[in-house]
Picture 1 (tube, rainbow, N blue to C red):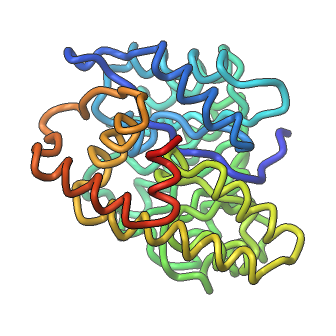
Picture 2 (cartoon, one colour):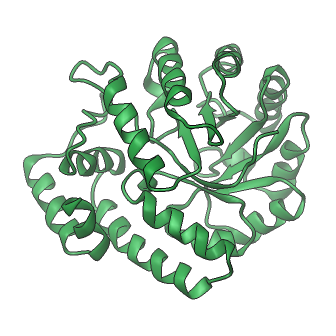
Length: 295
């Protein structure tokens, strides 16, 4: 089994003006975050716009992620899709191209817990790599109890989960059960690690990979005051990003640094010229944001 720990950016999917995958920009971004010390990539999740790409394009992104990752790094592919069959197809492809794990939100829609459980059971069983549930209760209210999550984590081939919630007592309970838990709330990584999380997966890691890697290093060594200070610096940037639609703001910020990742997929809009100027001003007013834009 791969080592499930550390910092995994939920990497954006760079696109050209026609919403086609820009592999060159993806490889540049992957090289940048790896140079900053991250431990792997989380591919085609919400930040990576997996839901709204074609199956074939998602496969191309998965292949690029594996190819761009040095030995010893962990590549987890989000395979959530509209149907069980599509998710299984993506899971089997991920294994064929060399990914180390797959992960999934429940299918979009108002499904019961029994239906979601059957989805995870069938997809995890068909996967040739360990499976990480993507727990995001605001998107899947049927999962919003500890008992139900413990039941899902006990399914065969389920290694653990990405935990995107503010209920850190629940994170602790799931970690206590032996499940691998990746903290999914960027603004609470230090708190999640203090409660036992094995690492983190997040959107803002695209922008501040060295800061998140440093935070994880401090926490792993028990240097909690240093971890808290880095979390505070990161959160100043997050406060700015949250003034805007998050995924377009992340791509726009990467553009400010010379890495054009293109638009988000329609109907998600881009930022207006006024918003771009406000975003830049806001970032420059923070220490970490100013360093990022100067790099």
